Amino acid sequence: MNVVAHEDDDILFMNPPTDTDVAAGRCLTTVYLTAGDDGQSASYWRGREDGAMAAYAAMAGRPNSWATAKLHTASGQAAVTRTLNGTGIRLIFLRLPTGSPSGRANHHYECLSKLHAGTIRRVHSMDGSAEYTNASLRATLTGFMTRFHPSVIRTLDYTDRYGDGDHADHHNAAYYTEEAQRDYTAPHRLQGFRGYSMTLLPANQSDSAAARKLAIFLAYAAHDSHVCQTADACRHARRYWSWMSRTYEVPAPSASTVATAQPAVDGRASRVSAQRLLPGATTRPSTRPQAPVAAHRLDPPSW
Image 1 (cartoon, helix red, strand yellow):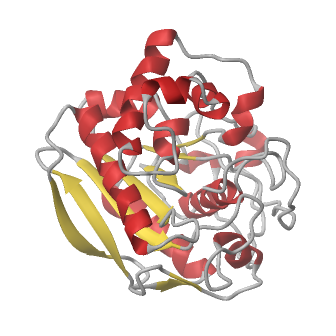
Image 2 (spheres, helix red, strand yellow):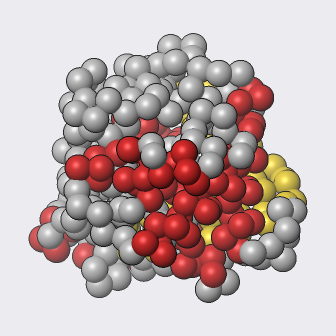
Image 3 (cartoon, one colour):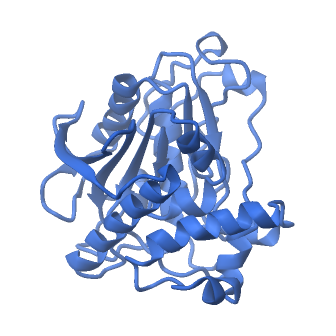
């Protein structure tokens, strides 16, 4: 299972691992927490969903044909789910408002940074179909894990804090995922992946892996006018090409950290023990991030 903020995060930051799973025919569920709207109209964020579907169809080498259904979540909400015909690939869209890179709200004064910090009590989906509190969003994610039973859960960077050069939505998606997996009792492994901040690290993907990642991204890009549209344009876009040639998993906390209960943001005690995780599995100590800050080292785009 992948849990990310925006509809291209898994393509840019979790490949090749996601592509490898698809090629192996494994069952895979990807959950997108936000609509990726960037303050734009519904036609824009619905196009980003189409882009995600096109990218997974390209990874699977299948026709871009999907079955759509409403999935009733553990918190009593309804989420849109799409399944690629003939595969075990499932995409779930919660359609929550996208925040700015620094954690400010773009829509209706709501964003994940405010929800996670407790400065708002709930956040509403862009299509008006659902609302989530801190507790119900965690319960929803835990419910997906329990229902689809992943042995590996991937998310973005749950180890670092706002202001490190990454998008605040990336961190928030990762924080919620890390918190939710504490209540998922089946043996599993948690993996976090760096987002924008990996631009500062050395390239670590082969030319062929970068080219494959770019081809998958271009299937997505055909539906998102805000990103580079051709291989040549992406190769000449400093950030995009740096992301194609890099994939970095965040360092895992130590085993001693895994076994230590810590209070969560709403005062719950975590119930994690080393025995319920696979070898190499991780959880994150519940030191909460500081309030979002505006200054970034990378001046990332707003999506």
